[in-house]
Image (cartoon, rainbow, N blue to C red; front, side):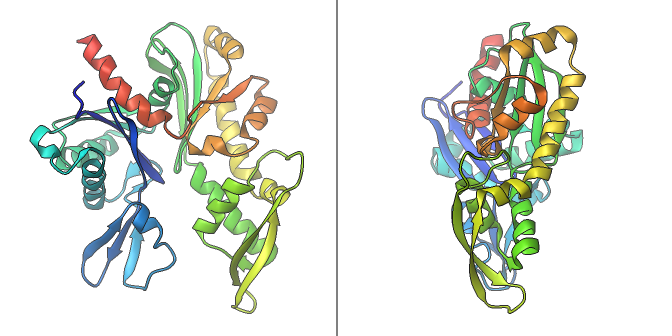
Length: 329
């Protein structure tokens, strides 16, 4: 693997890029600010995210991916090109990189081809795709080549990918369209229904990160949030508690637990015994939600732990996978 070769976790909410010898060098929101009047992209990544909900009508945010798959080929290509240049320098066309990109479990051939084409047009000389749970397992430091069952639950922005991995491949896998963004939406809905307050996705994400939980906290903590009162139409500040977020997040978190349960039911007995011994490993940004470990452990009876660096596990795994490919040659 040359130093120019990179691994990309191309996610619905954010994109991470891993460069050999440097680790994860870029983490940016997967969003573009587009000016409809001038018909051009104004900002990409973090600068575009800061514009969300704060721009005039002619500038609209575009997310080129939904539920982990590309929905807008042209903007996805421009976003990838921008991120690659930012990660490895503007002169990367002198040595076009090999790229490994993560995709959700169960993507269609058409969806896989869209990712490959976007990467080639963005400047890659070779593209390989890797399913998210396998990339996450490699990134979490698990030896996936052995005939031992490992269960990975990767909770991203748009999808949650669950897989039982053995001998380098997924024996049983599932992908559901309930993940981090659904947590944000659930908080927005709850605040609107309970407090008659309209808040944006950015505020909902702050609530999720700071006090969000899906399992009762030892102490009920609170934070102030601002939004628009739906009765008066005026700005208003309220206090929301962690107990309220537990109620708001109950449904999406239950969907993830049910999906984990479903995969366990389909797992061959020998591999199920391995998982009972080794536990379930959580990766992805959604794994950082307070109480998720306890909730899965309580419902399955299996020890559940979060990877050391869950946010970067998939990106690190895609980068290290290129080394594995080189060793197999």
